[in-house]
Figure (cartoon, protein in one colour):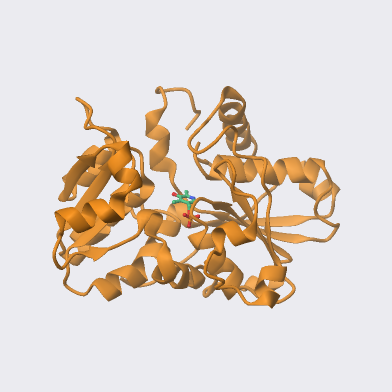
Length: 293
Ligand SMILES: *Cc1c(COP(=O)(O)O)cnc(C)c1O
């Protein structure tokens, strides 16, 4: 898979200009309709390592990672298996239908089995399968994410901001950015508040860890929770900037950015790079018409 060309768009909001702050949005969401956003970056090293093996990975009914893996496997001519958390429902989610359409074999396991999925896999044994951790994480996912910054002048930014699920993308951005750039992650799940909770194996050098920050408090109740206030914000942001965001990740990221501006968190003359990590397909779980795009 060839690295894609990247586009960044200036974010034009009066509250930025008023504080003498510039912000660019790195539009990974525009890369590809399916293999969208950060998923291409997290997967490409895994695919190189997989060789000709079939791919096996995990996810929930609306997992961006699952559908991206199904598509990437099909492109690479590899069989893929998706282990899905929870019972099969009578109608599959649009995401799972799409993954199945790319040839992914879906296997549903209970939430209890899912919590023990490594043991479950050992028992069931999928010989020869290359296992991609949930969310495309692990070291290959981190190294793959480093290439997000390889095609742009990352040095010119004082702050790089991204949404944090597993933190794989965040760790890659920290490792690939320059001393002097603060990398700020916005956790989209509850209870994720420290760098050590993400970097469990100590992959960051002390210098890198020193300029890696989490901005907790913007999870809106937890993973995939999306109260009306968030949906209204997503619509408002779209009206003001023409940037579409999603309800699980980037909506919360942009909310954190605008709230931080309200709090004068960024010094004057900061230059922000906001990573739009894609994920718009997940918005299909909403009632039609709830969002303006
Ligand atoms: C999967 C995903 C993330 C999470 O990335 P991590 O590397 O797991 O932190 C962020 N944004 C979007 C849109 C995603 O689909």
